[in-house]
Image (cartoon, rainbow over all chains, first blue to last red; front, side):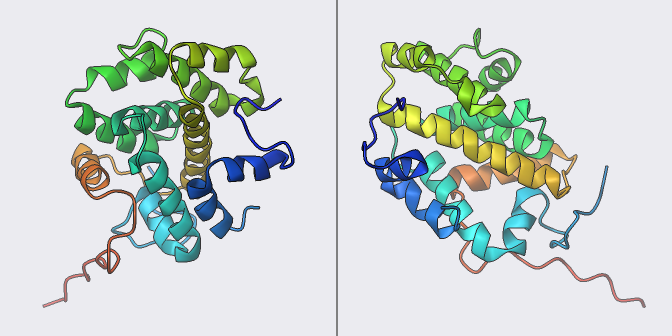
Length: 33
Length: 194
């Protein structure tokens, strides 16, 4: 179970991205996911 | 000490700065992520976030990042005892119980993210840490592991002069982590023979 509340239907890094969209944006720009 | 990195970078831009300029398309999102995490709105102070960056960099033995973020934390705190204590032993450092619990999580992420336990997170929550603070602590720790490996894996130049780091700290504390508008100055040309 994740340590913070993230959407059940988004496993792995995708749930973490959805949790904090501001930090997800540059990470996705980097082409990491 | 090496005086050149493994890739050609501007000679007047040591450490991470030269690497971020070497490849602007990767440098831009890295800078933006750092700006959000270390300078953006947060219930953790900027100094607390710099302490996380410093602890992780110190434990990764990245001299450039450790010295740079030590200088930034000192500038934000107005003293040097706290950051030295955090590097020496976060468990006894003069930080809040919440910060101590978050530093414990950051230290585990530095070693291996899977070492972070439910008990570590519960302990941080018991001291008042929010989910956002736990999230950002883990992401700052992960980001600086990347930075540390980026800098040392490409043998980025690490200046010896403490004045360099004081100037760098002034820039990242007062102007943040984004690329200056117009970029960085080019190196001075060599003197023309008479």
